[in-house]
Image (cartoon, rainbow, N blue to C red; front, side, top):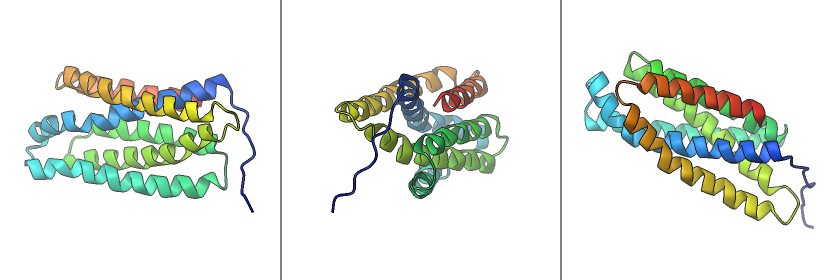
Length: 182
């Protein structure tokens, strides 16, 4: 017995938004490495203390994948993925405007949960398109992530320290807008 999914009817806005979401996900998460020296100076952290940012993101992203995978069977993938994006926006705001390290880590955790939920649902959403272009869409989705992973750290490096809060505010707004469009 073969289990097949009902083909989804994808519109261009959802496809473009999904690719844009992955691009900003790639850009934001790859920027943690550039943020570490900034946080070390801002909060007087050791290298080991500042490195926990990667652990927090990874473990909460795993939690987000579990939540996304569980909820995608109960709700539409577009809804779950679309909700994960503003969650990342909220986390970005917390990171940008945190006045202590614990709030920053909490923001990283919020970003991680949204990241995992989006990762688990958006790629599934696009791959279930039911057409011959589904594989191509997933490849483009991953290329969007890669493009963001290159551009994001450049933006963060350019903005630290003077415009860091402003850039994260803009990044957060982009998360909210693209999540709404998805």
